[in-house]
Image 1 (cartoon, rainbow, N blue to C red):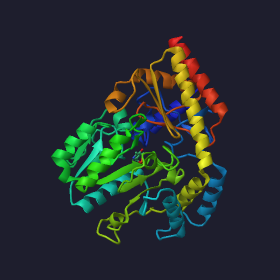
Image 2: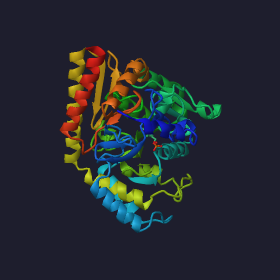
Image 3: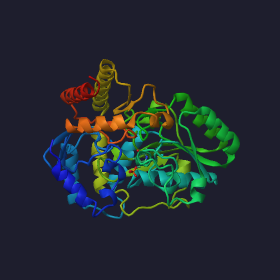
Image 4: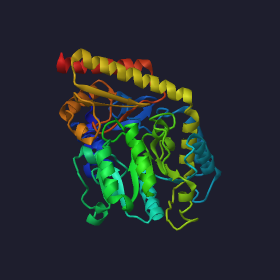
Length: 428
Ligand SMILES: *Cc1c(COP(=O)(O)O)cnc(C)c1O
């Protein structure tokens, strides 16, 4: 596979952007080599500027749940663009998407549209602090909640990929208010609440973690968070930015049958546009300006094109479509497990809904420590060899992969053939 144009495009980009990219994980640092520069995308496929095609399991980090350039979505966007690309004033498009979201996620009694997942989580914790009059927040090691200061403490995703425990530039006083606990560790959680319970504003979690590889929380862990937060008047925030409309038809919250106080969504809900939201109980959300004093705003919030893309995407994502995607994800994961057995590869394959991930580890992975102990150089090697074979996976073991509604059985078979060839070369 020839990727000379991508290589020179990367060199040129490095004269413009730090590291040549506008989001760190895209630089392929964890897997080595040079990132693929994209020309266009269609359906389940990415096409690079050298003319190579890839089966895409990143799908813009899960956002493109219907696949790229879905006809219905594109037609609606084109129409929306002609009506105006930004108003800076309310439009019924916002209410229409908001109502659709409320139908799917009953916990969204009130919600607010923002432009990124980072904004959603950042605003949610501001609200939690205002509601409780407390400063501290509890997060879990390896979970990623965007790049606002409070969350850059033992965070997952690109932060983990680059091996940063904390980010320089986050002040000591901000970091002090963030308590980072091990994922799935009930004892640590209980101890923390014994010691600090009355000073914690909120607990925020990815109930299915997708930013340290894919890891499911134990149901009893989530239930314990709900119980401890309720007992102490602490808000429970579930960050569904990645898992919303992915971990199940609704998301992780319905998978765990738990009612959070606040939720954050992003990725899928914007249908490929910069759009996210946070919401939850009316009594809390009504404390946001202009009703309450908690300030939160955005020039492009509720953007009409993003609202249209989100609405069309979620409308087309029916339970039947979701079930089909889930079945295909299962076939791929089953196939991978069988290959791992045949070639004696120490592989853990994890599937939750239409998300999947894998670790080169002989033991199941339950937290960030386990995830870190996986064979990352093997991951890098396999990633590079699969890319050569036209399979585009997330370029870090700390990221999840995603199925779209337009991947086919043939795509899955081709992917498994590529894995078999890679495992054969490495283990044959
Ligand atoms: C992607 C992600 C975010 C951040 O969203 P951005 O739109 O990248 O700011 C927050 N939380 C989780 C769980 C995510 O996966």
